[in-house]
Image 1 (cartoon, helix red, strand yellow):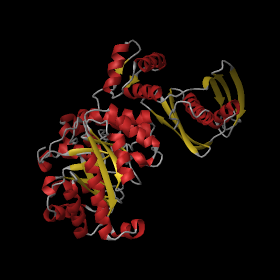
Image 2: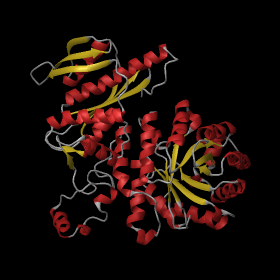
Image 3: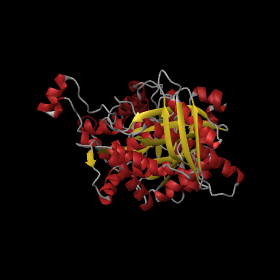
Image 4: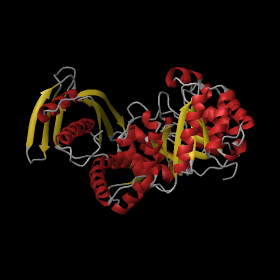
Length: 518
């Protein structure tokens, strides 16, 4: 690796999943991991294997199925964590164990209750054990940005001697500012023996909105790995946004002079995939991947763009995956054209899934004048995230208004072969639909969140309904699309009901093959 090669370490599946409400099931994690590999990230941090059986299974599955990037697993500096991480990673062609231990005074005193000497000893022991299992070892002194610089340098020097190949300097709570953070990197470069033999990495949180700025400042001081997430998701205010760091380095190559291995045209598909899987929508004015990132409304801007795009755009839309036209398929398009477009959008479907998308596409094409990429993505998402169904929607009608009582009539098909019909009222037409579904299925959940967003444009755009509900202390989610938002809402709510029933079935039959029902 040359000194001007920037390593992109993606932690969407680990730190990104720690965003409240952003947990992913196994299928979703593998789908995102494949998208990250296509994007060309250097390292995928697939999870924290000891955190749960599900995390272990996800890391192991990514390690076995996703090729190209280094696959990394997180572990605390103790034997149980490290050996568990290695068990999950050992089948990866290119594994990495990432061990961490807090070093700041506040963490030493209140969280760990350890003296400095104990911190150094535990860090060295953890790295030594990890290195006995794997050649590629990363060490992170948690809360490094609030750690005394001399002590930070001492810890870093000792773990390099113990065999760490990458040293990551986290701004765990987003406290640093660019000059201070750059100064910490500079101090380590000047005062740690052997630091020229390892890769120096940065991991910045965005609590003060400075994650990208701090990371870029560190690059100017010699850091060569940035830890980041798609859309900047993560704990609290999130992490350094991958798409922003990549495009900042690429666009300002004159300033940074760094090489990247990222295929930037896959940035927008990756962003949309993560947004749909996690349910965390990207704000319209989000840099690089937001809906308005390449939109121009002001007359002066439009005039300048017509004369020369460079007057008001420093990046070309196509360089981040924004197509020059979104109108690509119609009702007469064939299966092969649709299959190619789905692959271009970053989805991996088997033949039965592709056939289901094609069938749904034909139905949609009869209902919509124009099919957009967003419509195709929504159809693919609906197939990828559909699960075993006890109840299926046959028909839904509802009425509402200021001068009438909102009511709904529902017909549901049960897998046993029967159809049940019922009607009911509610505070509004959607509430009436939900209550009627509950009464038919005899499954009652507590609605936590409900939203409807437009998938594409125009008056016949599809609506995507997202439902988050609580059932027996667990959060279950459903999402569905339709040009009819009432139908989409009913389908999404029915997903939640079916997942609640599946959870009960798994409790009653513990030998049943595990299926993710979140």
